[in-house]
Length: 239
Image 1: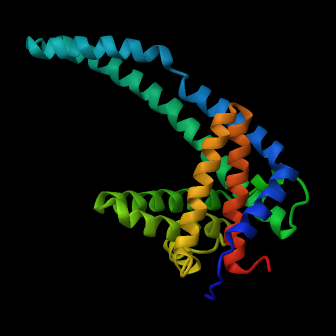
Image 2: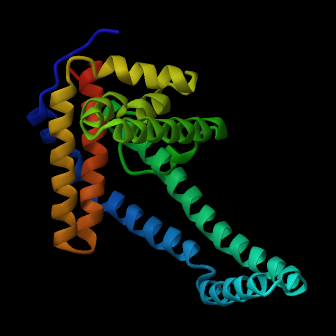
Image 3: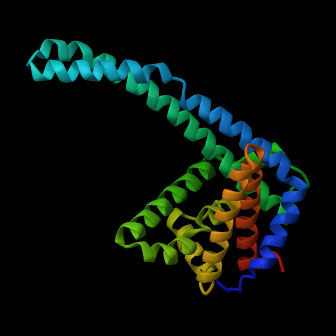
């Protein structure tokens, strides 16, 4: 795979142009998803206080050896946790679906497949969603391991696996580890440039947070376009 040098200023300029054109609508999508996934995650909010009391009762019953009480309370405690986990799981599924669709949307806008923000970008095979999710999960594990090994290695590892989900999105026929390997190859020779770009994106995220409310979601849209623009620059899809 041929490698190309990354121009941070060019990537940021490209990302900004697309953010100006499409960022507001994408920010609204991020806002709605945040509200929906947050609501799903709190489906069982009242259960938390109930579970706390139940778990304390179970602890007291164990301490006094009252196993009959433990047996009667355990199913209630378990069912409450299932509700909590179910709500959180649904929220995560929504975020995953939207993330994959937005990857496809950003790639499509920059490649000319889409001319506007459209939900056609979400019409993808189920296998694509699964693969992108698995790639994202594995890359997070890789980054976590690099952090545990020492803080310094993460600055060299994280930029190298950054594009794995995007590559998987654009090449759905590829295997999961093939996509991670491709990201490693794509970023070769540009580790420090990508590290600098990552720091800038973090700064933009903080700035968006300081701007309050919609600023956070505009920053997310800009980060999305920045990631995809950098990917395209390094694969020479955009000359």
